[in-house]
Length: 435
Image 1 (spheres, rainbow, N blue to C red):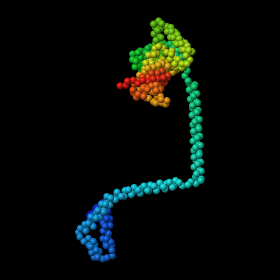
Image 2: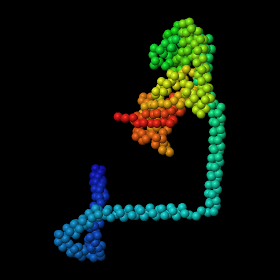
Image 3: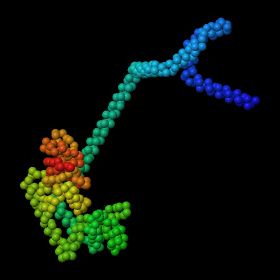
Image 4: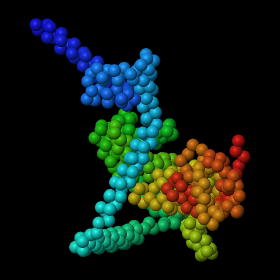
């Protein structure tokens, strides 16, 4: 019994699934609806109050032949079904789209009407009061910020004024440097000279050596670690060497004072007192300072930077052959001055007012107002930039230049920022043959 009941359930379930699949198909419902509409007389006859024999005879009269059965019963309803399935979407989609548009318009009109509802006088006053408070608070914050900015500007101006570097003439700067070295040399010992010689010899043997690690220095001297560190600390306090703290330990290199100490010791060994050499150098520096004073009185119209450039040593001319040489000179001269006494502007000012003629690669061209442009160039394989403000009418070649093309910069050095940015005034720029 249980097996028969299970069989009946399975059969009914399969039949139900089959009917569901057929009814879900759009063709079957469309065909049934089309058949009922086309054969409506059959439907009316079936639901009439006549007896069955009369109904059957009437229905048979509606379908007298086989072809009438096929045409009215199958073919025409099938054509209506297919037309409904394939043609109805072409009509319904535009209608549906129009309906959605109308719904959107209605929704917008409804929202607009809700927004245009009149506020009460009390709500209006609350909104106006809130807006006024916000405006007052914003203005107070702006005034407070402006006041703080003015106070900060005043503090910055005061600090800049109190820390403004004092320009020292070239001759006096060198004279003070030599006097300080003479005092330091009085207390230097042979142990310290030995350490200085090791550092100096390492630089002479390998120009690429910048700093010598302490462990390498320890291998070349006969002192223990404690004695060596005491010597190094005393040399560092006397500005004879410079220390650099690296991840692997301390490293050291000679300063200008250390090199000068070795030179003076060698002169004493060779029978020439250090005092005579220093006196001759001081005499030369004093003559430079005297000549500077004369030229300042005779040429009051020249700027201080140009005046300094007129008293340059003759050996300086070789350094203006390229921006790289200028950078090299400034870095080397800065190494010779103690950190506390260093004023790089005095070193850079030695080049101010000098005429240069450099071939550079174009980095950028920025057009300015008044028919002018800022042209920036640099030499190959070096981080140095030369900037020149030029007049386009006087420099027509600028319009022919492109980035990375070569050009000749001719002008006067007016300023140097650090060792990387050189500015030219009265510059002329000529395009070179770029192949």
